[in-house]
Amino acid sequence: MLGYTDSLTMYQDLTNNDETSNTRLFGYRYNNRLRQVYGRHNWKFLEEQGTTSTVASTQFYDMPYNFKKLINVTQTNGDTVYSPKKCPDRATWDLLNSSSTTSDIPEWYFVWENQLGLYPKSSSAGNTITYNYKKRTKDIDTADYTTGDVTVTNGSTTVTGNGTTFTAGMVGRWFKADGDGEWYKIAGFTSTTVITLKDSYEGTTGAGASYTIAEVCELPEDFQDIPVILAVSDYYRKEKDLKTAREFMNDAQEQIVAMKRRYYGATEDVAVIDNEIPINNPNLFVEL
Image (cartoon, rainbow, N blue to C red; front, top):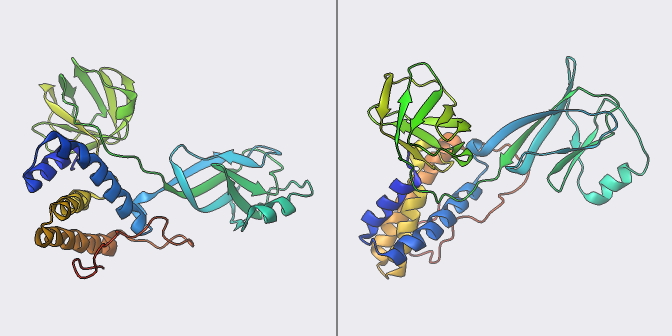
């Protein structure tokens, strides 16, 4: 895993510049490029699934905090799965709802202000609504946390800290006990001295171990240096070293092509949300 701290170090090494002003600009360059990579294709790794249950005579249901765009939705009633159609716009939705109707068979769905609406309203409670969605991503800007030490147990998901100040904000970050080398996603926060991992710890049981908690971007592990390389390209373009800028840009573009072959999935019926990675001079960089 390439966390924020190691990404910054990599950027400083490749630009040969660890000045405060360059360090400050890295966060902007890195996250701007990262958002462009996220928006370039319908990446499978940015998809998540959620469920909720119908409530009688209720039409709208809250989406998760990280909801960005709905891909599809189904409703399961017993052994039967229904797939409502997407309502094209608000005017059509309002027309559908000009008369009050309830049914356990949803015909249309509509997303409005981070809520999922189904038409007709459900006539009974307890049926399962399943929705697949593209999640919203956040900026990566938190340095590694390494304070204190931890006790880890083989086969357990519990990490117990000594001298630590774990926080709820660490859920979703990645944990590694030094000496083990494997990364584990943090799934839960219990207290300032206890967190839980998504998967059981497979390393050697031990106490007093040094560790790292890193904030990592959503890109697959093999491609997490892409936004760093793009930020480095931006740096050299600013410095008017166009040859070096081109070399780093081409490296990043080649990695994006490789990532597309492995992780791209055209599961949405809507065009790319964000712009392609901008190329200021078509004679300077290779556009893929």
